[in-house]
Length: 231
Image (cartoon, rainbow, N blue to C red; front, side, top):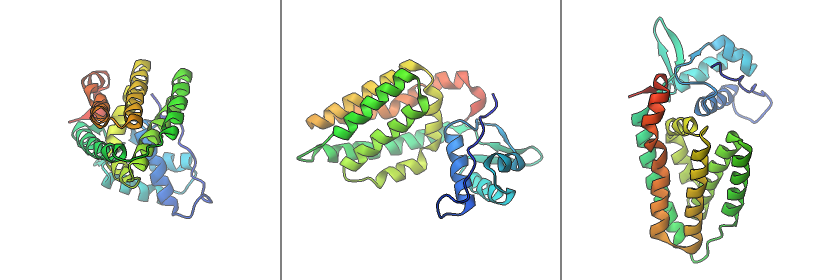
């Protein structure tokens, strides 16, 4: 399956270097599976799609290699790294540990305003009904970010974000199944309801189950997409 066209990098957008914006676009494309695991990459083709010179592409690719998202194989070429299940397991552990801790602190607050979370849930229902997976995934991130904000540790989500890209690729593979997104919304609702009521044990159990769900589907995903994974 050919990857959809990458978004051109606007040289006038932001104040960072062009190579930084190229890195962001490519890492997000890998995360979103617009660039598939194992897919061959050409600096020339990437530069044309991103509408930049090859120099920032080369710099960004070098950073992606350091991040473990791209591999350069001698006499073979440059490819998107396959998903390492060991890395996904580590990311799940980090995410679950931090999210449970944040949920406990949020539940301990005397006042817990979950209105934003309820609004996000409503929008997720609409995205599910429309089959809009990109919007659904964006809202999924927004909901968890809001829980970290309520718990008083919004910066901790950045630590989670840095380690979970491999896990996100597994999550993306699981999302085309409508029953998966339906179940995840139901789990979100359980978490939000427990937070609203201050039911710490119930909420922590729901957070743990939610964090572990995607890797429970790993055997099925490995069978469906064996070329996307490595041990």
